[in-house]
Image (cartoon, rainbow, N blue to C red; front, side, top):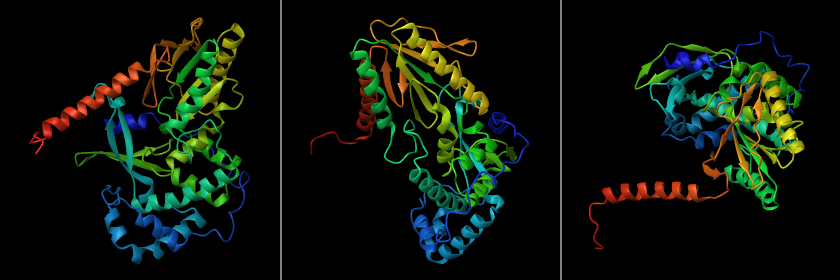
Length: 377
């Protein structure tokens, strides 16, 4: 049942084949090869406590045989990169459902996390390095993205956004912040559109071909307490739990803020839009930006969960304007959890402090119950 639900959220393939040849450049350079020491470095960082993928090749074995397997793996990886050929085992995933919250009988309350081949993950690390080198060197990823980006984090996201928002409120402006929620964002990424964007950002042809073949004809099964479901095909998305997934998602969503006049900031798919809402003209700008975002989602075959998109009205003179996405009015919120931090309509941190204190008291209670002797000696 879980696997049927997880595959039901995938989008259908368009049927076309991306034109990799005409939208990308040749390989980086002859000097850019996959070397033994590079592979050895990644093998040395393997976490032996992690579970293997469907091929059942345990990371402990690879780490203990690091001297013996580094060179042959480097040769296999180089050949895979040159030809775009990928072993079928690297395209299979055991899905572990991670409970989020809500009714445990509702499959929608579980996050699918992929356990994939360990050698395949090492190859993903190599490809990720190639892609990230290009992205950073050409400053491809916009400043609005703080997720899975070097030298950025949840903290930089919150500071950058609320430094601007609070300064506007301090000046007496009304400010509206809209928390946007993509529905199954990682699972609905269109492979064809993603490959097209890799070409537009001028990645080399060999890497784009490899990514295309890595995404194509993937399959998954759900594993719970040793029980395994049947294999199901994957038609869209980037695997959650994979090495390449986050960087590919950042590339896919990078152009979402083109033409946006308000302040838009992202942490992977967690997106918020904010701007001055003092005058009717100000509010029209925010509404127009919402319409642009809705159009982007349609073009890129993504979906907003409109019921979960909420508006936080800030400032004393706020008119509590009602915004729309399509024909649906967005709900008003008194407080939102923003990357783990509770932000309320008064920009008062008391709710956040209460939540942290409650969590700390629970931990102290656990420690207190576990301590055998409570005397000073």
